[in-house]
Figure 1 (cartoon, one colour):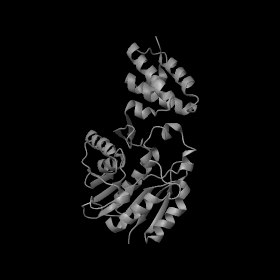
Figure 2 (figure 1 turned 30 degrees about the horizontal axis):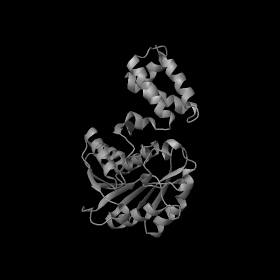
Figure 3 (figure 1 turned 120 degrees about the horizontal axis):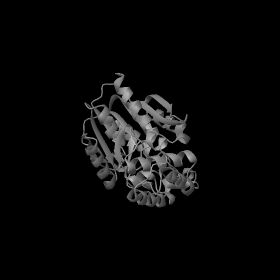
Figure 4 (figure 1 turned 90 degrees about the horizontal axis):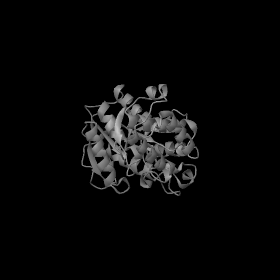
Length: 287
């Protein structure tokens, strides 16, 4: 009968072309903790634990899918973000740790008393991870979220229900927005918009480029700031005086985005680095 140790060995061998050793171990632990209803500590402490036949068959199927580059989060159907569980599928991006840092920045801004906040808008919500995490941690704030994708909004609504929060979801295209947003002004607008260029794509892992939704990732090579321009213009008309705009950004365009916001008369522009020391977040205030 197959053991936990055997699975680690099979995954290391089967995924060595796609992932480094640390990534492979993380993926293996995700699969085993899910299927065996175990803990990481227990799996590592008892590598000779035998795996029941039914679970072993499922693990073999998962490994075959992983070898194609399919992300483990899509295979398992969910992932963790900001301490919460989120359903994910190919209609939404898989939430990243960098985005957790952006959420944390917003929450700390509200908690610091820097701004009295009653309404927040998340633009391009995808799985709903930003909007739902904010609502969960700021329960007295009304949170709205927009996305162009019907499928993404369906997933986001399921995630709101899963995490027991109420979000005002709106289907809209921020590049061609008309009257969908019938709402008083917001104190905070936040967005993790598409920002990956075709040149960036060459450096990306196939588990992203082949499986995650391209409309949520890529921008035209000749207009990489298209979404930042549109959202900044929208924010000028929909932020309260003194309101804050938060972006996750492409580190290669940090200076251009700062200049863009400055030219549109935003002030108190602050660029922040992520855990890897890269310029990945920015905030700006409207006068």
